[in-house]
Structures are given as C-alpha cells and as structure tokens.
Image (cartoon, rainbow, N blue to C red):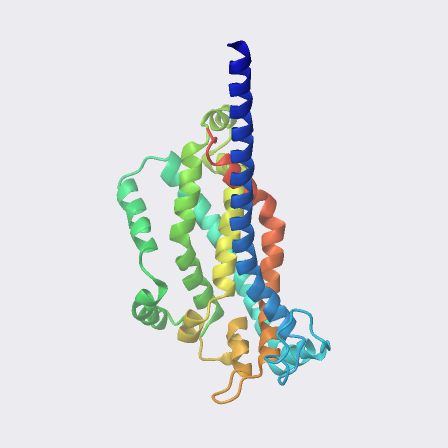
Length: 291
C-alpha cells in the first residue's frame, strides 16, 4: 500500500511538473509573439531609414545592404527638424511639469481634504476623461480666441495641460487613497503644513505613479498633431509631427527620409521610458499592496 501511494505521489509530481513546464512554454511563446509583433514595425522603420527610395520596398531585410546615414542629415535639415524638435521639447517639458504639479495637488486635495462639492467636482473630472480631444475643438477654439491665446505657445501649453489633467488626477487620487495616513500624521506632529506634507511626504511616495503620469503625458504631447493645427497659424511654432509632412507629398513620398524622421521622433520617448522604467515597474508591482 505504501509503495502504491509513493508511486501515485511520484506520478502526480511528474504530471504537475510537465503541466507547469508546458504552461510556461505556452505563456512565453505568446509573450514573445506579442513582443515580435510590436518590435518588428519599429525595426523595419529603422532599417528603412538607411535605405534609398529605390530599395526601400525591394530590399525587405532588416539589415540594409548599403547604409545611407546621410538620410538622417537630410531629414534633419530638409524637414526643419531642428526648430520643430526644440518646439516639441519645450512644449513637452512645460506641459508635463504643469500637469504633475496641478494634478498632484488636486489629487491630494480630493483624497485628504473635505470641502463642499468635492465628490461632484471629482466626478466632473472623470466625465471629462470620456470626452475625446476633437470633441472639444470648437469650444477650445472659441475660448482661446476670446482670451487672445490662439497662435501662441502659452495657449497651446495650457490646452495640453487641460487635456492631461483628468487622467492624471484619477491615477494620483487612487494612489493617495491607498497610502497610509500615519506618515502624514507624523509629519503633522513635526509641524508640517498641508503644503509641506504634500511636498515632503505625498510626492516622494507617489514616485511610481508620477512616472506613469510623466510618460503618459509626455507621449501624448510629443505625438499631438491635430490640436497644434487648430491653435497655430504660424508654422514655425508647430511641434515636431508637422515636420514629417514635408516628406509626404500629394503624389510622391520620400520614404527613407520619412522613416528617418519617424526614428528621430520616436527616440526621445523611448529614452524617457527607459529612464522611467524602474519606477513604472515598481508602481505596477506595489499597487496591490500599498497601505
């Protein structure tokens, strides 16, 4: 009987191990398939940026036979990438900083303070998340015209801050609701004001969520195109995405220069994500155990 039970137990262990190995292989295969599906277009864009107009669709390999590095030089100068790159960089920095400051203060107030209309105001922000950006174009155009802010950098920056506030407030408030209040009580005993608690306690604890807010909004501002066309009349004030139009004509598209421009455009956001990756992963792993 004992021998029978030992054999049965051994078979169960073998069955469990085989099942676990099969499950891991299947999961890794699916994840690798998704990764290849996401990475292949990016790799093809980078490879095509080193080819010529004649070989871009003839040579489909990811390693070009001849490397034409001058495509990047031509894309930068012919597309006016220098001016538009600085425009996008400035817009992104000011918008992200504005969103982080305003949304973190608002989220902390919604989470910790009691004031009349608190829930109604928060629900208004949630409803605003469901309104697509083009849905507010008419109202935004009229408002900026009346405020004399259309075709100005400050008008574009304020509009983009408004676009990212609702989602950022929601993410930060959810995090602040789960953080322990004991740390804030200790800071309050030490003489910290509400502003000091927000600055010295709440913000350092919210670094993982702030990283998500920064990456999400930086990507949103960096890729914005339609709102810039609505606000700006002066082409020199337009962001980087407008410069890509110069390589796409009505009848002919210069694909190597376009791909070089797309690579230049994507590179800063990829670098930002890599720098923030540690905090993003930390936010995902700690989100379930905060508090």
